[in-house]
Image 1 (cartoon, rainbow, N blue to C red):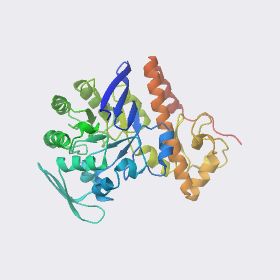
Image 2: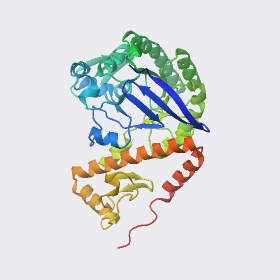
Image 3: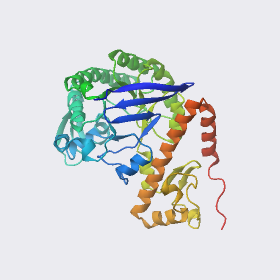
Image 4: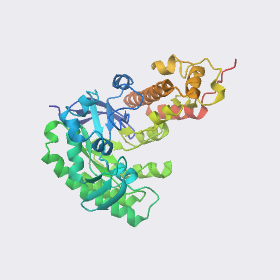
Length: 381
């Protein structure tokens, strides 16, 4: 059984290229993890997801515990077999969804009691139960249970949630060891909290580093604060985390956010943005965003990007994609999601190559400039 290990391959400034080894394969970083909330990346087959270059997908503990149930998934051979994804899977702890989706929740130091948003049934999620569920799913990379609060919030409230998350981190780590996670080649991440308060971010990072987790996640960002605040918190937090462990920025984000975060030393990302945007007629490309709902595309025979390796970007005209979007056809969601995930993976591959070549600063500047220019050559019939 492979151990959960991190190996730094190259660095360029603060940007890092590395390899993360799990029981189900190698994850090349910087890595973007498509979100498969309920055991599926929406509008995509798993082999398509893999073909875009993805090494890892994310599953959601809260949704999977409610439907179809972690115990059922375990009886059926685990999440890898259940969703036909034989590669690495990361699961979140379920805490964020409990805070944002669940009804009538009650939180204290033991955990959180809540009612399902699906049927109103009552559940209790503790650090131990969260780790048990993730173990039943068979996740290669697991998260401690934490409390994530939205910003802005008072410093007292941020401090309370951060210190509760630290206490839950210790309990999560003990439960992970008791369930034999390390022996199964699985890894557990501690989650840095602290909102937009630098001293609290530093305290959280230092306490978690002392607990010696397999990796470290930065939570509680991209929850309403401006980008400059997020980047400031990264610059505060990352120097306090071990250089020999992976760093995962949770729930981020836009291509711009990802490039700027890699420049500051982040390794891993996840976000629903590329799949959600694809289902709503928005394409991500090297030219920036292209809104296929816009009538200007109705007579445009060009593909989204003729240089792309992705058939969705290369082989279908903007006019056809516009037609599919306006007609409400499911194929529009499938093609645009495919395009978006392929673009995100090509962006990650480009950053990995640039870091190894020592040209990341130029890559960053050129990429940001390309998005700023946009698609500057509109079709002229």
